[in-house]
Length: 474
Length: 98
Image 1 (spheres, rainbow over the protein chains, first blue to last red):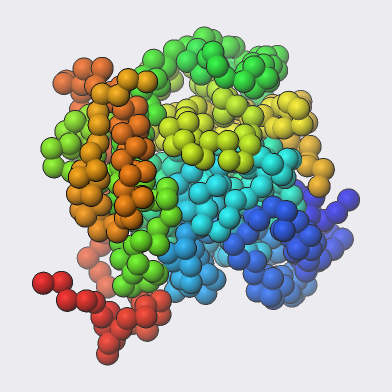
Image 2 (tube, helix red, strand yellow; image 1 turned 30 degrees about the vertical axis):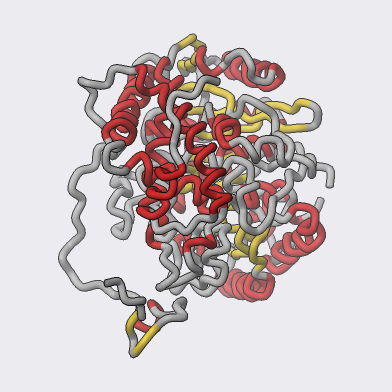
């Protein structure tokens, strides 16, 4: 067993029992990165020196304080990869773009501060679609990231490098952001557990904004336990983000293992449609059956406004993007605006159009009203069911280049994911099958602030299946 | 697919100017095509009657969140200016606007 293959839970146990040190663990991941990086292109910056220094420091703390230090620092010595949208003090942060290619932040994002306080060792900053604009990783100004399960295919985006590095052993967990799909799609395409929390559950402070009323801050892990553990640390009110939620943060790991008997699961007909990959459909429906066998009751439901969700999303999100990206003026940091990549330019143009005089009512305002309809559908559904299960993607991971010339086709890869962001509700991607050597993911979706329930259901499913234990042969 | 909305070259140029986004002639032609495609796609919303629906802009229902009017630690002037190539005596230096 290689150390880079461990889950967080296993690694913490090993560190406590002195089976290995944090330096051993971090070295194992760094070696793996060195070995695989040429093939995967998962990182924009590898922080080898800083990571080893941090790891040594963790080992000293553990030696002097003993295993009880994990009560204060639950992730002491655990190597993590951070998406390049997160400001990391003193460590280059590019957002996957060329325009801020040499930006070195003078401060940490709140989540980075929280992870550092918990003892995490940062091994590097991961590749991504520039600014989070994309579903495949192909929109990175730093080159495409490859799927560890098949190098000719995309790993999903925009948190492409976070998924590829974790699936290939470059870290024990990685961070992401999810505005329309960006944690869940890469998690689904790389056989990982990924959470898109409720809007406001995790502080957005210090994470470069894409669309501020949609952006959520999530993470990717190898199993549900690890995922719940990380959210315990990252969630909570932050005075630096006015939209962060005041709701109490539960101890998510405590409910894991509880029975899901009597749970009511909704399966919406609009998410199992003609034209989607049959193997994906079968895998997800099989997973629903498995959950039914665990004592859940399955109900057919309908979310009719979902048909309009993509249009709603591709008006509101570019509008917010065009506003957020206006701050990149080449004065305070970065290059001139012509340095923006194609997709950023496309979204700035689209968003400026839908907000411009004469078009605001026809596009932005209408879409904001449709947002209410999409949200209402989910509110209605959750009066009758506890959770909803849907596929994460209509297809298996697609080929690099397959959709890159057709923006509309590319946007449609998020068709089962965007409605969740429109409603601001949480969703957990859980691996639920393989087809032709490629992973399939499903989403467990709940009402706002129901992350605890999502973890409970995901964990129960994980205990009777072993999809998440498969790793790529590289 | 039948096209209903056609975005003109002039419109793309106008929008690019509003967004202070310098585009090449080639980019303008490409974005005219693609913007037309995307607008055509999102025009499906026009099928819905939204007259009596209120817009949603904040999904968790927060309203008027204020911070305390108190002084808190902030970045130093040196830190704030650490990423610019264009500074003068502790200020950001910008080109003349008018």
